[in-house]
Each structure stands twice: as structure tokens, then as C-alpha cells.
Length: 227
Image (cartoon, rainbow, N blue to C red):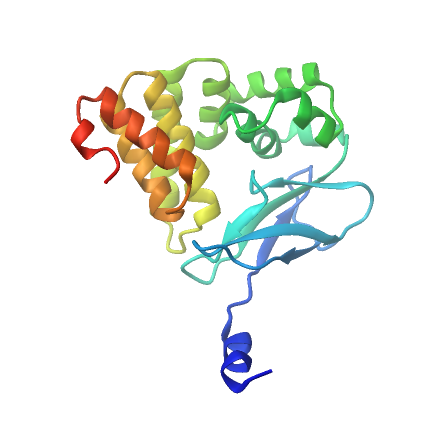
């Protein structure tokens, strides 16, 4: 290895994780590996070691970027078909997120996590009564209560932005969900702002850019689209 490459190798930050299980309890039984970063610095995550039939459900797209401070990246790993995960609203919201965002189907996530589609759908509906703003927002959005969902998700997004250590894999989905709720509530200016927050975390995210441009056009600001 050349000296410069060797220096870069040792200088590269190590990504640390805070792993919780289907019960919402911290676990040391799971080891994760992070792959090579993409152009935005996001790295694919995969389970390197775990007991039983483990499934990585958060981050929702199995990708994370180095936080801007010392805090670890939150990760949720459940055992496939573990009923305790559907009693844990954080885990349930994690499973629901890609479905609500439209990047996964209910049937595919049911197959992946080992639950029936009906069981997942019921658990998602129960999220609307959650105390946590993110979990509640996901549930309300799943139920089609878009204006109420936007209020909860706006709170969740602001909470994540105000953390001393801002975690991209927490901010990005909150911004995308907030943008979706605001768009469905026909608050297009505000939706464009939320999608811009998502793009700040992940500049090459084509879906975020597309949705922001659509929101700006619907807000009567076509000249701002694409900038």
C-alpha cells in the first residue's frame, strides 16, 4: 500500500453503532459492517454476526453516513418473525418507513421481516397513538391523516436537527416523510423546504430532488425547480 493510501486508510473515521433489538433493548449480540461510501459519504450496512435469523430494519434503507459528532448511528436489528417487534413502536415505525415512502411494498416487507401483511398493517395503524413524534407521524401518514402527520413529523425533524450530534440516517427519513405529508396536505412551499433538508444530507438523492422540484412547481415557483 502506498504511503498516501495508507495514511487515508488509518485516518478514515470508524462508524460506531447503537444497536437495539425487537424489544427496544440495547444488544451486543449483533456486529455490523459498513461498506465503501458513495459520492455523498453514505455507506451500505450489513449484519456481519448475529444470533438467529436477524433482519436489519433501521436505517430504513440499510445505509448510513458518519454523524457530525461523537454519537453512534442508531440501528435496529430484529429476529425474523419476533412478535415483540410489533409491540415495539420504534421497530414498527422502522418497518413502516420504506412502505410509507413508497420505496417498498407491504408484501415484500412482510416477507423480509417474517410477519403477515395483516399483522404489519395493524401494527402500523397503532402507531398513530404513539407518544414519540416520529412514530406517531409515520402512523398518521400511513392512515392518510396527512396534515396531522406533517405536524408530528415536523416536530420529529426539528428534534433531529437540534441534536448536538446530527445523524444523517435519522434526519434524512424524517425530512422525506415530512415532505411527503406536507405535499399530500397541499402545503407545497413547506414540502419543498423539507425535501431541501433531505438533499442537504444526501445531495445525489434523485427521488428527493424530483419531489422537491414537483413541490416547487405546484407552489407556483417553477423557476426555482432544479436549482
